[in-house]
Amino acid sequence: MIPPIADTILDTIGRTPLVRLHKLTAGVIRAEVLAKLETFNPGNSIKDRMALKMIEDAERAGQLRPGGVIVEGTSGNTGMGLALAAVVKGYRCIFTTTDKQSKEKIDALRAFGADVIVCPTDVDPEDPRSYYSVASRLARDVPNAWKAGQYDNLSNTAAHYEQTGPEIWEQTGGRITHLVAGVGTGGTISGAGRFLKERNPAIKVWGIDTYGSVFKKYKETGVFDKHEIYPYVTEGIGEDFLPGNVDFSVIDHFEKVTDKDAALMTRRLTREEGIFGGNSAGAAMAGLLQLAPHVADDDVIVVIVHDHGSRYLGKMFNDDWMRAKGYLNKTGATARDLVAQRTDRRLVTVDCAEPVSRAIQVMAEHGYSHVPVTDAGRMVGSINETSLYDALVADASVRTQPVASLMQPAFPFVDISTSLEALATMITPDNPAVLVRDFACGETFIVTRADVIQALA
Ligand SMILES: Cc1ncc(COP(=O)(O)O)c(C=O)c1O
Image (cartoon, rainbow, N blue to C red):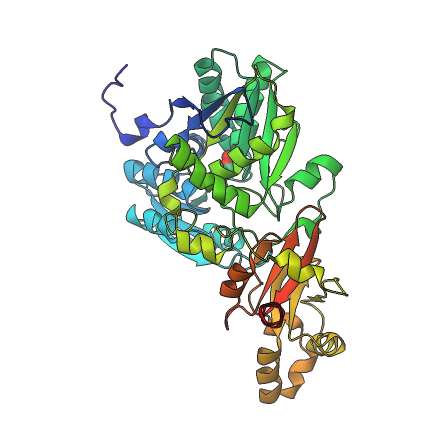
């Protein structure tokens, strides 16, 4: 059926296609796997649904008034939905985002006339520099501002309860047995999942999480563990706090997927099925394949494709970027071989609140030139010999200041299967070390320039 004339672009949101997968699951899962293509929304993501719902609920509640300013901390897709609606409805938008996000996503927001403020990724949500805090400050200080608050604004979940869930139910004729979706704010999975479970309580709802995020452990133990938090590459999913929109009672299981597996699957989804989905769709598909032993042949599984691949052309779809991250090269020596040679495998860190003198002592004791810096157990930065030396020469009293005052960016995390060649390309003057994570045993190791030289010699 050809859709009728839409009065505005906002009337084209929703009613997205559900497409059967054929090659990606072959030989692994015999069940019917269907991709819900949210890329068909006008902003190319599922977030158009909740953005419009949040705005219209705020208008009804008198929180967003004519000529108002929409403020939000957004990784791009929610911003796009808000910006689209703002253009049609006549609002101004100011967004804060993190320096981890694709440049394409930020440029797209600016294309809609939004102001975008880029904030550092590796700081606590409560830190005044975080994109959450900056958005809250703007919402307070800018006249006539309204903060959408996608994490805790329950209009987000409601949008998916009212639209995404019913669409999936109708499109599958009620046959759906499993819903698989990446979890960020939690709106998609909580809203669609709740609707579907109300229709059929036997439906299983599987949330896809990243390594570096708190969701899975919280679901399984009830413990909010800051030690689970560290920087990761996968975009759109996983969090370092518990958003109000994540309804843990709706989600039956969280499956964690590595950055590498998510990136590789993002490419496979495009090359094998012609579905140009984003990084969280890759994570969701990879998570589903990991869960294959829990799938029956007659199951009907719906996987959410949250956003469009075009937003990741500079990343997961770029061979140089994939190689630099160590995601493409699979042969030869790997980080595992380097780490295996260690006699002392413990990762030594300093806390950002400890004095610089403590960092000097730790480095001297172990003969290290680089040490990761933590904040309550969470990796937030690094400290190195060169910047320490420069600072001490300039002002010896720096020894009593907290490590945070000399902190450099955090070292990137890579999978333990990363090749030696890839490690070598990642270790540069700006980035003297990488953290190697063995996801199987949950251990983290540091690999520095000296380690790579030794391995290559
Ligand atoms: C690309 C992408 N995938 C997945 C998600 C997660 O969806 P939700 O926030 O509804 O949990 C987001 C949310 O920001 C996203 O941008």
